[in-house]
Length: 391
Image 1: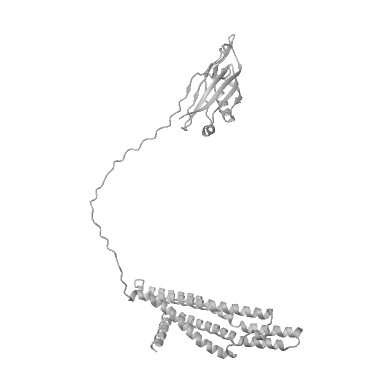
Image 2: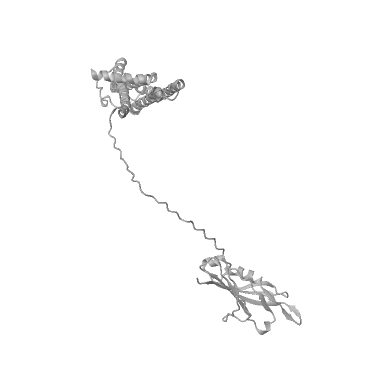
């Protein structure tokens, strides 16, 4: 008796602390489980009896293939399916209503909290504790009620659909259906049995929710041994070291590449060709070029002389690829000493031709003078060599 009394007191305390919404949720759980248990009892008793009676009625008819027998069979199957599916949609609806009622309890609990804060302020957390408890307890009750009803409703719906499908597809002999465990029960009897069992299930669910809440109180009532580590810091002498900052080293300006023009004769080349040697350092991004102009003309051509030789630009792509080569150009020296009509005669690679032509157009000569008059000199050949210096 003492245990039963404690059990009832725990349920009453839970319903009192949760407010009116908790009582509504408990009633919905009670009704939902009453319908679930009624369906279980019906499937195991009256449904089996109705199936056996319907199948026996059809088997007794001599004209099993006649239209009349087919119509009777369809009517029997329809009545059995209709009775089998009774209350299952209602069970699903009640399972879906439980979390909504829990949300309603949460809102009402928050309203209680705001009313208390409006009256007494927020300086006392104890004054709003009842509203917080009501909000959280109703939410938990709604979730527990929904979880307890969703799975039985799904199993009943699956069992019902399978039974109806078997009846609609094929009518098997009545002997294949087992007899019910107990005799056929009427609806009032099934409801009384279901209500008694559902009251027990509802009480167990409420007691379980209260037990979950009670486990949180142990942190305030039970003694726990707490081990704390103590750290002892020993004072030590500290010295402050200063370091003089050195001035930053100024950036060294980029040096202009040295270019020199020196006369040099390519002994292996043809006569009458003026060579220019252009070199680029392979290890430095700044090209170091040298142009060698030369007066390697025959004595008959000594009357015109080079005055200015512009340094060709070593192509960046050729330098990046490490290419070397030469270009032979032909041009005309005008009466003013300028260069025109520059044409590439031969080259090792087209990558050097543009640089050689642009450099040749900037050359300056002392024009040829015959009988006191300057004249043009055509067919002047110039040999320009591009090479990369080591290091």
